[in-house]
Structure formats: structure tokens, C-alpha cells
Length: 213
Length: 300
Image 1 (cartoon, chains in turn red, cyan):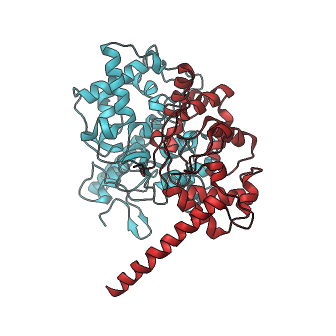
Image 2: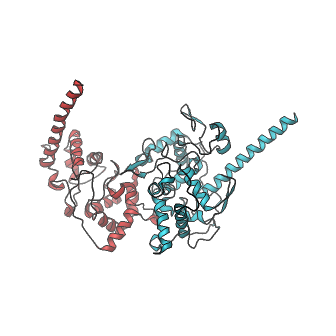
Image 3: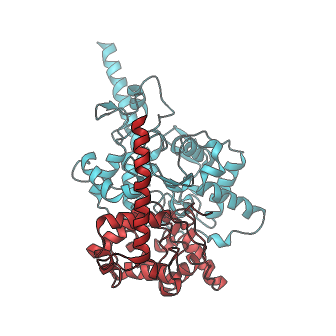
């Protein structure tokens, strides 16, 4: 009993310390060249839609870790993110991933769009286009596109610019870290019109990770 | 002596009958007999479901088909949905589409040695693939599923073996299929969705990726537990939207691995595993075989 109490007592400050360290990292960066995350990803982790900087708040921690590691290795290439990820220690990667995963998904201003475009996008997200071997987005990204663990990220509550840029990155090969090449095979089959429609639809949907007030 | 001869003859005939019935089951389940010049068919668009009483029942059928767990839960005994084996709401060619099956019933099935109605065929799905209980032929659920299939087959030639019906039969590869090699394929290509223990994945209590073995999967009587059937399905359809990317050997190997795990008992179970195996199972399945020291299908 004493041991358990002791363990509990020592755990709490450790946890708090880790959260503080992550918070500092997010707000100020580190001295090794990592800039403040929130400069681009927003104070609440909601991203900057107009610039295509993604929401991090409420994403799966394993997924965030994986992306940072892949920026380091070059499996996912990005001029801004690669040097930032390389300047993080492995411990910082774990800390910052846990920090953003625990944040609630911020209220998101649906981007709107033409009804015909949105309904075309909805069909791709919920039914797919099997005549062209395109499954529904939500078949892998889960109900409401809220993500399935570390392998299939949340795709709702992200900006249209970010979603379409990632589909293009899969097509072009600048992002190659999708499991089993599943997303690459889908991206290659999506037409330009379909990318536009599905990005618009997803950017018009709220998302949640269950941490909302 | 005369007695022994007649017993031997009887055994010989029985074995031949089992082999024969096994072969014809394989043919009907995997559409091995579809001729090269099979007529083609495209099902109507979902948007064209009419907005009337008929269309309402069609939509009910589609709901049951896509989310069986929710809309027909009293008949389901595992974590499966119809759409898990019949992709794209039962529309996809080479994924046992409803339009391929509907026009072929009533049909004789070696599985139960009688002419089956389409309703009886669906009852088989519930009993085996859904490890549950069969809805009555006149139940609202069955009526909705039949109505959905009827609508989807609008304009299809009755009785025709259509191109894309069933799963395209996959001949056994040159090298004997092996569960050990299959495990490697599984780890690399299947596990990300179906899990390290074949358990599948859920979100909000809803099945997202179906369980492939274990208590929540289809039982030992389902067509999919047959390695030839599973290999055919996998080759044509898996990984999702990447059908045709595994080679024939990989498809057979991974099917062998998946079907070398425990799953719910065969509802036709008789007395013991050995007898059940003899009556209902053939060389295309692992039921009653010893894997890792345990007999599959036996109570552990």
C-alpha cells in the first residue's frame, strides 16, 4: 500500500513536469532550432486554415510521433517541418505528441462551399467511388473521419488546403509514410475534381476527440 | 468376406460423395464455373432508388446490409456486417455482389443437398457468416434484404452467370500454401487494419475493420473459412482498394494463416470434431486439424 502511494505521489509531479515541458516547447520551442509549434499550429493547436497548417490538437499521439519521426527520416518531406523535427530530441517528440493528443479539438469554423461540391465530397467520404476502386474515406479513417489510432489520422476538422496538399503529396511521392501504401493507392485514383470536393466536404465538418468541455 | 467388401464399397462411395460435394461447393462459392464470355452487368446507381414505398424498403435493406450490427442485431452473433464480405454495399464485382447471386436463385446447393431459395441462402449467411440465427423468410429484415437485392439486380438477365459474380476462383499455387509464410504477409499487409490477433478494430463501439478470427468472427461453417474461398476473396479485394496486388502464392499463404486460427463452432456440429470434420469439411480447411498443439474446432 505504501509503495502504491509512493508511486502515485512521485508520478503526479513527473506527469506535471512533462506537461509543463511540452507546453513550453509548444509556446517557445527549444534552443536547438525547434521553433514554437503554436506559431503556425495556433495557440489552441487548431492550426491555421488559411495557410494550410494542420490542426494538431486531439490527433492521436502515436500518429503525431510517427509524423515527426518521418519528417526526420525524410519519409515525409516538408521544407519547414523537416529541420524543426530534426532539432527535437526523441524525448521531446514523445512529450509534444502526448501534449497535443490530450488537447480538446478546438471549435472549428466550417469552411462552407457550394452545395453540389459538398455533396459530391460527402459521397466520396461516406460511400467512396468503387467504380474507380476508391473506398469511402471513413472506411479507414473511422466514423465521422475522426481517425483510427496511430495509422489512420483524423481528417475532419482539418482545412481543405491541408487535406488537398496531403493528397497531392501522396500522389507526387513527397509523402510516403502511409501504411501498406493504402493512401497512395487511393490518392492516385482520385481525380482533381474529387480531391477538391472531398477536401471541401471534410473541411466543412466538425471533429472531436472526446475531450471537449 | 462379403460383408467386408460391401462395407469397403460403402466407405468408397461415401468418400467419393464427400469429395464430389466438396468440389461442387467450391464451384458455387467461388464462381469457378463462370465462362469467359459471361454477360456484363452494372447495377443501378444508389441515387436512383425511387422515392416511394418500394424505395423505402430498398433503403432499409441497404441499411441492414451495411450496418447489420445495428439494423438486424437480434440475428447477429458476432462482430460482422454483410458488407465485410460483399464490399461497396454488395455492389462490387468480384466481391460476391448481390446482383451476381440474386439472378442465380433458386439454386441447388451441395452444402445442404437441396434447392435453396434466395431467402434460404441469406439465412445461411446469418447462421454461419454472422454466427447468429436466421431471420424468418417473412421477417421485415429478410424482406428488406431481398428487396434491396431485387432492386440492385434491376435489368440483369435472370439465371445468367454474370461477369464479376462470386469471387474469381484462384488456382492453388505451385508451392504448398504455408501458414508461416502467410503470417509474414499478414503482418506486412493486413495487421494495420485487422489487428495483431485478427480481432479487427472498432470505434465508438462500431466495427470499422472486421475481425478475421476469434469469437467475434464468422464460424467454422461459413464459406469464408474455406481457404480456397478466402484466397479468392483476398486476391481480388485485399488490401482494401488494392485488390490484385498480392500474388497468388501470397493470397493462399495468408488465407492459410488466417484460417489456421480458432473461430466459433460449426453450427452443424455432430457429437465430436472428427465426425463433424468428416461430414462437412474437406482438404480446403483446417477444421479438426492440430495447429500449435490444439485441435481447431475442439473445446479448449
